Every structure is written in structure tokens, then in C-alpha cells.
Length: 321
Ligand SMILES: Cc1cc2nc3c(=O)[nH]c(=O)nc-3n(C[C@H](O)[C@H](O)[C@H](O)COP(=O)(O)OP(=O)(O)OC[C@H]3O[C@@H](n4cnc5c(N)ncnc54)[C@H](O)[C@@H]3O)c2cc1C
Image 1 (cartoon, rainbow, N blue to C red):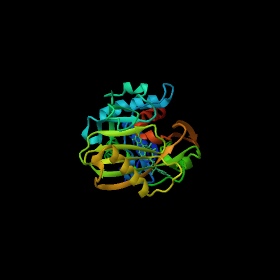
Image 2 (image 1 turned 90 degrees about the vertical axis):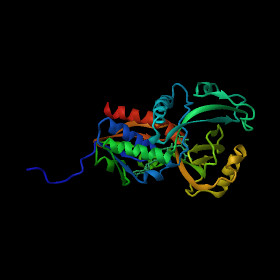
Image 3 (image 1 turned 180 degrees about the vertical axis):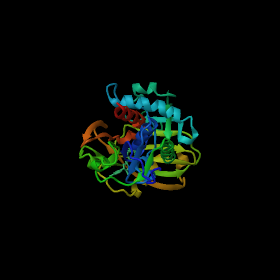
């Protein structure tokens, strides 16, 4: 006689966090054959990850920085994803400009599609160059990752963990991908939430992106995603207010319209706020958690989408190893 009791099978791994870091890690683990449960405090579409622009690259860290290795993995993964229209990732041509120097930085020549901007194309900035980079339309991309995880047998559950030790009662491996909340869960006071804000407008016909690099708190950037354009940007470390600031939105709209006049008067669809999980460096490391294993994967700051695949593959290798 068969067992008539119905039980949810015990997962091999609990991933804490359903943002881009948690979902990508969960996909890698599930596609490697593990039973994966993602526990998230927020619906996937309401995470910081859903707010990102999201430019995937370029990787500009030094050769000894692990972020360089993670970024390289991302370049390959996002190039492949851009071939799949269902992924929400697409390659866009556009300008990277800066007031930091009179010429593009040396690494720029290695960026796909590199060509120096003319003076007019620099839009008043001291230097600028053209590039072709992958961009993720984050709401679509997160839905794609969720579907890919489910197809590999994984699950996403909207149920916060009270502590990492609580997650360890469900599986012998816990992956901490809680973004800003990792500060509390891991007792790590080096994580700081840095506020970002976007204005999303109906696309008046833009096909090229624009991004000002090197600025600290306010800069100009716009990223077309089909019928909408995401405008930014700010990095406000002392503002913890999760509501969009109308004055910041005005400033973003005005600056973007100066560079791209077609954005003046574009219909505003929504205002979005997200908190970047900034840390001096990404924490990707294993430590014991009672009798279980815990792998931390958090603190990706302003480049979490860019680094997501490199970090996720490394976590999967750690768990398997
Ligand atoms: C305005 C803006 C623009 C950006 N643009 C870019 C860009 O162009 N390119 C780029 O690479 N990056 C960009 N970033 C950075 C990127 O968005 C982040 O680095 C990335 O989203 C971090 O992902 P995460 O999964 O670690 O965090 P999050 O997306 O914040 O996810 C954290 C997850 O942990 C969950 N969680 C928290 N506490 C608990 C708990 N107790 N139990 C269970 N789950 C919990 C949350 O519910 C959530 O699911 C941008 C960020 C902002 C704000």
C-alpha cells in the first residue's frame, strides 16, 4: 500500500531573497539538480531589483578584484540572454559620458561597439563614447528568472525568514541573498541602503541609451525598454524615505530633457524608489550555521544585475564543492 500522506519534499537549499541575486542563484542551483526553495519578504516585482535600469556592464574593476571575474561571466550570460526575446534582455547602443576627464578612460576601448563621441554627441560633457551593452527590462527579466526557476523544479514562497537559523530548519544549505536586509540577518553593519529614484515615461521614440558615469549623487541617464523609458538617476545615502521625492523627479526629468529634447513632456507612467545594498565589497563566502551551511551572497551595491550571474555561478560551485 502506498504512502497516503502528502508532504512537500524537503528542499536541499533555501535561498533567502527573491531579488535578482536570489533568483539567479536559485536558477543556477536548481539547474544543477538541487531542490530549491526561495523565501522572499516582498513579492519579486516589488524588490529593489525590479527598479534597476538595468545596464549590464561594463565591468571596470581592477584585474585582482573578484568583481572583474563575475562581470566577465555576466557578459557571456547576458549576451546569450539577449538572443532570447522572452528574457527581457536586449542589446542597446548608446552613449557613456563623463565630466571626469577629457578623453574616454583606457578600458573604454574594450567595450563592445566602442566609438568616441563627437563634440555634439557629448551633450556638453567633457568626454563620451558609444557602446553596445545588454540592458534588462527588470520586471520582465525577473518574471523570466522566476519561470526558469519553476521549470527547473524550484519554488518561490512569499514568507520572510525571522533569522538565517530559522531557514536552516528547512534545509541543510541556506543562501543569504537578502540585499539591504542582509545587514540585520547577518549582523553586518557595513551594509548601507543607498536610495535611488527613477521616473518611468512613455517612450517618445528613443532607441538609444545615455548614461553619465563618475558623478556621485545626481547624474543623467535614460534607458529605453520598448514602449517605456527609465530616467535617472540619484544615489542618496542619507535619505531613507521609500516614497519618491517630487523635487528629485523634477530634477531628473529636466536634466534628461536637456540632453534629449524628445523627453520633454513625455507622459509620466510612474515614479520608483529602490535601495542599493552598498557594502565596501560583495560578501560571497561560506560559514557554518549550527549544523547547516550558510553561503552569503549580498552587498552588490549599484551593480547587482551586472554581477548576478558571476556570483550565482560561484555560489553554485561552492555548494556543489
Ligand atoms: C535606481 C537603481 C538603479 C539601478 N541600476 C542598476 C543597473 O543599471 N545595473 C546594475 O547592475 N544594477 C543596478 N542597480 C543595483 C541593483 O538593483 C542591486 O544591486 C540589486 O537589485 C540587488 O539585488 P538583491 O537581490 O541583492 O536585492 P533586492 O532586490 O533588494 O532583493 C532582496 C530580497 O531579499 C528579501 N528579503 C529581505 N529580508 C528578508 C527576510 N527576512 N526573509 C526573506 N526574504 C527577505 C526581499 O524581500 C527581496 O526579495 C540599481 C539600483 C537602483 C536602486
